[in-house]
View 1 (cartoon, rainbow, N blue to C red):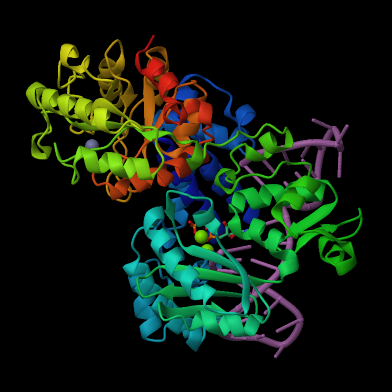
View 2 (view 1 turned 30 degrees about the vertical axis):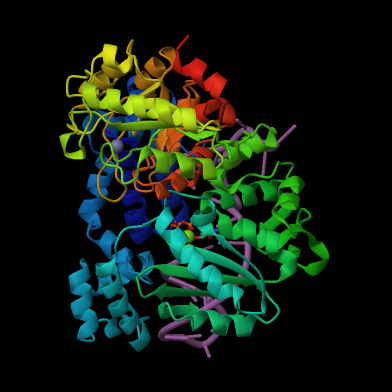
Length: 584
DNA sequence: GCCGTTTTCGGCCCGACTGTTTTCAGTCG
Ligand SMILES: Nc1nc2c(ncn2[C@H]2C[C@H](O)[C@@H](COP(=O)(O)OP(=O)(O)OP(=O)(O)O)O2)c(=O)[nH]1
Ligand SMILES: [Mg+2]
Ligand SMILES: [Mg+2]
Ligand SMILES: [Zn+2]
């Protein structure tokens, strides 16, 4: 049972509780448990098997939910959900996904009109059947019908790299308006999450109404769902949502903090503020003397901070937290203890240790890759084409590899300011053996190993396969370890703990593959890897010279995984790197 | 359901926008 599956069960319980009960906080406890389980790099299945006290270990998981987790791990299901869903149909969950239709509305249409599916809701909305329920008029009826269309057209969350293109467009558009003073892309985009659900943008302006008008008439917008004095929400022609918030310059910091999120980070910060007799919102920090309610406290004379983010964190006795860490996964405690990691940054990167060339499935020659790397300011790169079992890529056998080695030797004579390492991405076969023999691989400076076939073996078999490939072999880097393709292919199940242990022992680095649709390892597992002191290589796996620029996406995820320069072998100088690769 | 410099029940983040409401509930960020 994977963490995601456990989390999905709790999410269902939370929604059914919201529909059927009036206690919001009961539902929230389940929702919060789902978030904790989903965001943990540790396998809850293994923790249950190891009899770890989950309630003790995780704030937000108590006796009740910890028992639920045990039950799910041991039986594969949760009786509480089964009982609940006999009373409250599971299909109602789908209806809450329609924008504008929440648990209260679902409860009423279910109880009063016996509607339990989206199709039934559509029929009822079309023939006026919702009007008799009460609280639903002509406009809501129309909104529901439009909401159903959007629900049916809903695609996946966008890759961060695709969101970049939209953000650039929006940036150009906002720059053209003189009334806009400052603006910033925020939300999950600023936190550099691997996928984003929408684009959130924060603006300060001399004239809010004019800027609102300007934004809502952007030619990429298909429909404006709402637009008030300070915020608007619109859907673009490509179905992607953009949320705008306008704020006074004085509160830019507080608003930046709010709108960057995450929601869980915000809630945690705001709770801490209350403990310190403050109240925190997007309008700033306000003093709140005991006995005074939050709403009374929010007056001009009580305002004490909000110009920038740092002064708010400082007031709460914390260090400023980089947006990538703001997921409520321990960063708040670390910040209070002044123990935040010094996150890896692009200017610390010295080279790129995976790329393909026209020797196999890359588009560019070795020389073209070298020239591009020099432009990026790198001190070294590794040429790592595919091995022979990857026949469709023109994978190399020993003879072809020997030729490439000669070529690299001669290029190293020409390009003195960069070191070109001889490498290969060697396929791991089904039985865990490598595609080329050790005697061949020993000719190389750096050996990457990766799985490309049989991605869905049972977890223990897959784990043993990987371990066999890296334990006592010439392998230096385990590349794209889970083989996930975002929105297309689930990650292979492997036991990370065992692999991290063996990798650490064998001086094998784990890759953070920077291809925007891979980002593998992901942030959660990168954070986990740190506990095993295993080293990381952030590689672009470029198949064209332009893709060498994907490095930043790898950096983004490494930062989200709390990774520091000392963990990243391609942020080291060439001497230290070579020593690591020699495994001495 | 979870939590506690209130050890045991009462509070749990805070605000904008919309529609149908005549004073605010519901939904969303
Ligand atoms: N305080 C508070 N802030 C919230 C709440 N919901 C959202 N926010 C803030 C934090 C979010 O990062 C930010 C943008 O909201 P989004 O729904 O777009 O979420 P986010 O961008 O984090 O993720 P996404 O990829 O869009 O799903 O607004 C909330 O319930 N309370
Ligand atoms: Mg967002
Ligand atoms: Mg949003
Ligand atoms: Zn590859």
